[in-house]
Amino acid sequence: MTDYPAGDTIYESVSFVRSPQILDMLSYWESKRAGGRLPRPVDIDPTEIPRLIASIVICDLEINPFRVRYRLAGTRQVHILGNELTGRYVDELNWEEGPFVHRIFARARETAAPVFGYYHWKFREGTPGASEFGLFPLSEDGQTVTRVLGIDEFFPAPDSLVFASRQRL
Image 1 (cartoon, rainbow, N blue to C red):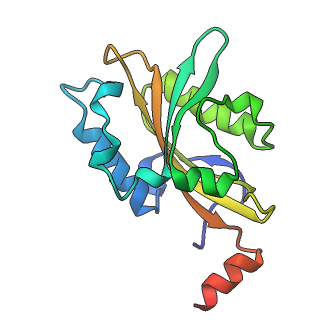
Image 2 (cartoon, one colour):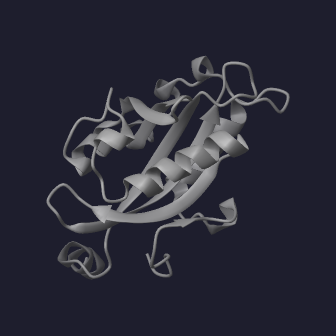
């Protein structure tokens, strides 16, 4: 867990991703593409990715105004964040990192391509933490992004007691 960015970052390419879970999700997403078109929401079946399901989110992207609504949140997402996300909007959660989270979803919508990166936040207990993430656009028509499949790998912050105890194991 060394050499992660000091601040919230959108990676320039997938080559920066270290998480095997995110790379597995990329492979799954790519397997659902047909003829270069984006996967449709109906193509995604969380039961096909049982090892990843606890860490995923599926979000609707609303256009006017642009808003992100959680359609599904895996159990690890809910546990780490300390509250249910399903049916809630990013802008209603009052997260310090909310503007960054909103920006990465907007990037996925605008580019119609996966977005990868790393951001800092607080675990539900207030412990500093971080997440490496991947967002994968979905589309009803193969081009216009209407939904996003996302996955996070969560880490305690390197300066936290939780991180220090994990390193000694």
